[in-house]
View (tube, helix red, strand yellow):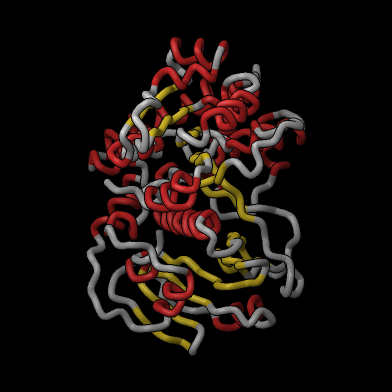
Length: 404
């Protein structure tokens, strides 16, 4: 299928002679995405770090990449995809050399299953030579096949009663099978179980090993097994430390590695404009929400991934600086999500599986000083209620339809 980032990568990066860095969770579809670019160019090469021949070539003479292309054929578009090269020592300097030597005549796409900023340390910077994009799992709007709306249009649509009945089957399948292409398109819960075990094992036993050289991988596997039970609540490192019988700093280090490898992401509490707010504890959400056992938690996690995907897409494509937070005060009143645009609260969102009660007092207490719109998103179909001009309750299908 045509992935949502494809046009943006071509228009904003490749056509402007910028390298495109595309990172995202393991098995989210980066390789398939890269190969979808092949029909758009005249000459195409896909090279993976796991291939011995390419690893040898990249280590000894990166500029010999030019031998794989025919530069005598003028006015032709050439694209090379370099997959997982961040695993190689000194990859950044080598890539800079290739770009400076061939960048005028060769488009370059770099993909990786770890956040590429992990490996962008040192004095020799690639700044100004690339644009960064983050590829997320499939979302409801992407499966519908519509173009994602710009932020302003999407926001306005939330406060208008829906005119079209949308198909909720893709959303129910997403909740049960995740947004990763292999299990989703299999339509089979057994395939999901097999796939999930394999994915978690590869994240810990391969990707984490390559990133950190940690010797305690079996203990990290225990940590990974504990995290699905922590979704949606402020994360206590102290509790994890006691369960694992390791130091506080060790748990923090392991969590940072798992976050860099796109196993989960964290949301911080928004501390400005909120009276008696919590200032520290983050909440975490998994990219594979099916690891959560409770359906309500699964839905909250799925909504978090959709919102994070939208924030990253709008940021990466120049709509502004979008970030996702949550709201919680010391009285334990909470709103699940807060989208912040250019450092200003933009939209507060509460996730409910089926409950249509709205706690207006808690909303007012948490958002009153922000002058920020609020929506309550309910998983079940056929719900729309406008509470005020800037507060509404609506079904998840209507909320998610125009998001990336």
